[in-house]
Amino acid sequence: MKRILLSMLVLTGATLLPAADPYAGYIYPAGIQAGTTNRFIVGGQNLWGVRDVAFSQPGLHVLKIERVPGFAPPTGLQRKHLKNWLDGIAEGRREEPPKPNDPHLNEWRSNSWWRALNTLDAGQLAIVERDLYTPRNALQDTPSLRQMMLVTVAADADARPGWGTFSAWGWNGMSAPRPFAITARPHAPEPLYIPPHRPQPDPTFADLRRGGVILDGQIMPGSTDTFRLRLAAEKSYAFNIVARELQPYIGDAVPGFFNAVLTLKDDAGNVVATADDEARFRPDPTLTFTPALEGDYWLEIHDVLYRGRADFVYQITIDADPLPPDTPNGTLAPFPPPDGVVAKAGAVSTKTFIIDTPGPRVLEVTARRRGSPLDAVLTLRKASGGEPLAQWDDATNTVFTGTIPQGECDPVGLYDFKEPGEYVAEITDRTRHGGSDYVWWLEVRRPSPHFEVYSTRSTLPLKGGMPLKVGFRILRKDGFTGTVKLEFPEGIRARNAVATSGVDTVTAELYYTKKRLAELQTVKLYAKANIDGETVQVPVIPCDEYEQAFAWHHFVPAEAFLFRGQPGGGGKPANAKPKKKQK
Image 1 (tube, rainbow, N blue to C red):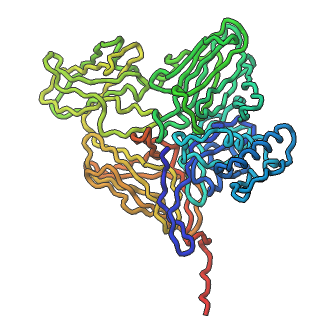
Image 2: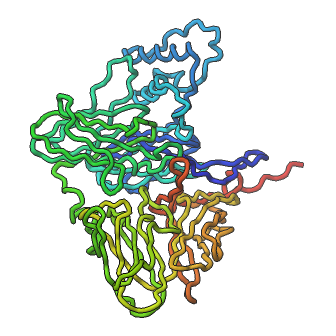
Image 3: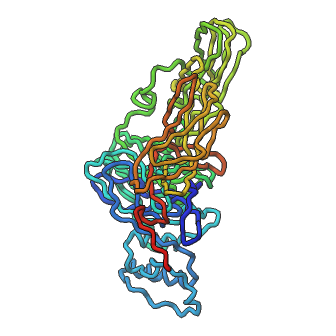
């Protein structure tokens, strides 16, 4: 997992030390029902300086933050003693048993939770036991997920259901936002961890004849989660899992995301339905099933390669009598009628257009960006026939944005037409597939130089006198080559915030200039340039940059820039008076 690093300096005595942002790799569960209170596990790195958690949705209140101490491997006899104590607690004996006669007792590892197991609640005990009983595998060890904290959150009864984000922040910075949901439906989580030598709990049960439910889980190494569900006869059910959307890019795993598989079995153990990748290139599958008989069914969830780690978190929403996928009420509804469709495998779809005067034109296909599965190839010919004038496949000079980027599959090209006349655009599928949903749109227009700007981080924790380095990517379109200047709100001063002609990436140093604290807030950043004698200003798109599978870099858009300004002075109040020099 790539960490988003913050180039800050913290004054400690006479030594300047770099501090890294908190990294929140996951929150489990990934949502809360309106009108309830729940405790969540946040796992990541550099979390122990966190002071608060900020949610983008109104109606959520953080009641308590607890640090989970790090668990170093205990010595052999210490591990045995801890397990004996935990077994006693499970049987109702909370007092600590006598320590063994160990000549190396003074070498036992110190841990605040181990010293007070009898004071821990069920959730805390489950965390301790999972650590003690899970074999440590160096190949699956994830330093970026070693730290944990427990966050208790209350949701107002009238909190609006929907997806938002959370960010952890403190003296050392802010974490990149992570998805978090408010739901109207109740949540049914998988059971707490129970050591393998004890009787295992029954799978979580949900009666779906009485309404919908959200299933919450976390896939650990090699595990398969199971839920028991009671379904009504002759009713259609859709099981929609959200997994990759919660953690779209994992930097140190291949494939670089949790690739979930759903399997539904009847009470006799027969597989009645299964789903892997969803249509339209989304790895989060949707399983649909209509039982002939009412009864109990068993839903199983695992990774396609049976991998697992703490950030393999998921939510499953179960809907009864859902709309069929890919209808006009679904993905394509917001868009105008398409210009064509590659109706069958290997087919060529065409559109004829007129060029009235010679000169350059931009030809741009839109398909994947609007949910079409088409991987388009665009070929330009004269309507009268002859050899192709030009051909374009994937877009170039693009930014990989979104949780599942597809924009690079839509070709765009610039062609200088030497004479007016009738021309034909031919559209084929690069993989030689086709179907009624392989639709496409074509725009033929004169070049209109413009640009877009993306950031490499969306959180801006600024402290007076200390630089925060933020990268910006300029996407130049239709031949724009001019200088781009970044603009920031009052209180933020920037260095190296100009991209000259031919430069597509800049790393700006941001400073906080105010002498008073700026509370956590959202801000907007802008970029401007001179195009054909006019000043053009565009908003900077807030993003966070992630690495996927050790190689690819992607920009995940955020709702807004999250900013907090703190005066300098080594943590002293901005209005603090200097101490008098001693004689």
